[in-house]
Image (cartoon, rainbow, N blue to C red; front, side, top):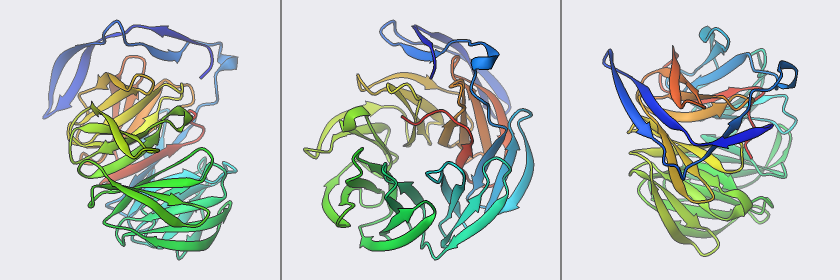
Length: 350
């Protein structure tokens, strides 16, 4: 994230906007907690900043295009039924938008927002992901209880196998060597491991209620699982298939976005309407962002590491958060049930 400094933070006066009232809250971060943020750098050294944010409106079969400098929606375009998640192709040129009920993937220019094509017959692609070596493309069929594994060459996919699983395959994580894909099964309260080479299920283990988001800690040490049906992140030693710890974050712990410093990761708490910051080395919660409209969900971070964008799924809005102060600074109305959010360039995911 560039040159950085570690310092203790005292966070006060969080803004809480709810029912047209403003409430001041003070939250102190203990002296043992440290955050790493980017120092102010000469303008010539700053990374290029994105201009266009893409927000998927899952309940309206559309995409909101937001001009990031003015923080205004400049266009809403139809994209396909139930767009939930999105990601870039390995060459970083094309944005894939997975239309779960439309059974296809729309291709978008992430800079202009132009739809450039479609990949048909990708069945029920709720969550999607490339393996780290880009050899495999995995599409979770949330509605049809299946996981489709494709041999991938960029956006050219060839179905290798359909793997039937229990109820509601949700999110995906991979081992760094691309050998294993982990899948949360929301309505079975389970976590499955799939061998990618053979496309076979290695094992299934129990989790907390309604497991959703997944994140692998550095060195493939632990899997972090957002337990949306409860109020914690479950830490799992996937090699022994045992729970290591429960990190209390807030009701509806759901999805992850790493800060980009290889140490911290954000988790959205849908029901609590908060976002927590977790230290992946100590496995402790080190801070909360409060005062958010209802349903924080997917997140993205600008390449300078200073701004967090989050879809607010129950509020039909997208929020913009200043990371150094951990304060909500803007709220942008979008479509119904906003889910995925993306812009390019962005902060690193590792």
